[in-house]
Amino acid sequence: MTDPTRSASTLVRNVIERDGVVRHGLSRGLINAHALARSIQLANPRAASFDAILSAIRRYAPNDVSEKRNTSAKLIHKLTMKNHVTVLSIRNQPEVQLTIARFAAEVDYTHGETFRVVIAPKTLSVTADSKNANKLASSIPKARVVKQTENLAELDVDMTADADSTAGTISAVTTELAINDVNIIQLSTVGPGHILILVDERNATNAYEALEGM
Image (cartoon, rainbow, N blue to C red; front, side, top):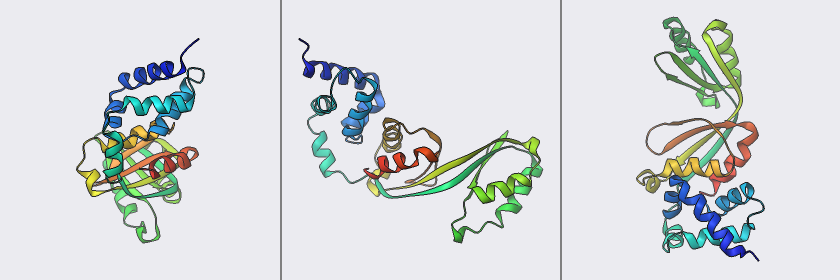
């Protein structure tokens, strides 16, 4: 008869040792053990029960992990979410930059409107609320617009002061989302300790709940 405890231990060891990010995050107390157990159990539904996998994760982690989790500050200080966000990918041309600059001057940030531009040599990316994105797209020649990605949600992640000086915090955030089956469409940092993450609106609730526990 198969020993379920041994099966769970072997499964957990194989999963963790194959993934350096998970192993490192778990040892530092940055990864939610319940979310990791759920992810492993869903990927291997017949191998072991959720409780057996969770127990194996706790046994695998270094002895001081639980102490770190109890004494460490939370990674995230404040978390907010905004729906109806669109990303425009546009070919970078001088006249396009001028159009965007004029358009940006009319955006009303005080009323919660979103407008952010990232410029690269060949293309530029504009992240905006759907209303402004559609207005901008209509003022730019269609041949210049490479892609318009709609129905996104933006997670505004304000990290704690301790998290800002701790190695691996961004990896912990992205790993937590991956464990909860959330695909990151776009990620950017705005100064120290501030992360903006775009996900599909269908995954927004899962993403928010996953990060809320951090």
